[in-house]
Image 1 (cartoon, helix red, strand yellow):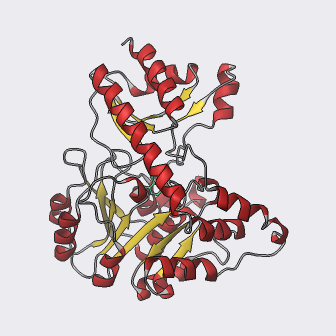
Image 2 (cartoon, protein in one colour):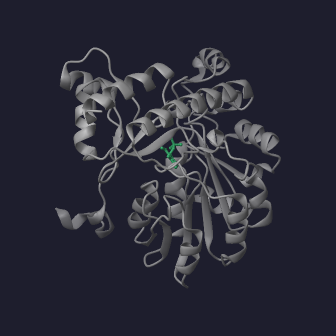
Length: 360
Ligand SMILES: Cc1ncc(COP(=O)(O)O)c(C=O)c1O
């Protein structure tokens, strides 16, 4: 039987998502469990979006607009770029997949970092490509190191900015210098899933300008994080028309569901909600920083809604002990965990339980 499966699948493992709350409640017989494991939005999503969705439930018997015309138009207006430069997807996850399917042939090299979003590497392997892994430097994407690894086999470079899980970022100046040095026939996929949480001024706030200057850059953005719509699966790419046209060839005909399209259009109009999300995240981040410092724990400063922290104890063990106490986080390798920033109450519960587990 094993012979029927593509050989590319042999080295692949299924993605392990954050553990669902109900699972943990069942396993440990707990009544209250909080999940700080998947960088979800503790404020939920915009009330305006909710209202709109409630009035959009009648048309579910019909297929969604396969072209996502109204969503593309709304994005085009908001981002000040032509509709032909935009392609919505079922989450950024799907876009990562589509980019791999569009570009990678067996033997092609794809460069990314060692500690970053794992789907860049698994989709490369899935297509028979070779991942070239350039270790982070100071927990941050090493753009210089990436440039040194470009060869005549390089097809694609993945940059996650700010990075998941380390929360670190590269600056606009560093990126502009990098883009200018990458050959034209190498595509740069630039994933900005956490862009709305960034506090630093030297972050490239208007990355759409990159696409206007460099046809080999594809920007990825999502409605799953700051917009709080992870359950509806909506994201989009912005890129050169030719690039978008080709990604569109491998896309499923109705990839973005109708509620997702409706929600995203309304969400784009609610800047107030995004501001609220940003402020709560910043408050939570500062609180967690202070508590980690008091405990003497090391962490790189984060520009996202999660913190990568060294708990000086095996992460898997800490993960299990926190679960027993009703808190789900994400264990990373060694002594590192990633914790999503929650509501202030969730953050306090997490710290209380972490202190217990670490004996601090
Ligand atoms: C960096 C990064 N890219 C993409 C994704 C996928 O997001 P989506 O929910 O839009 O599929 C995530 C989700 O955690 C992420 O952290």
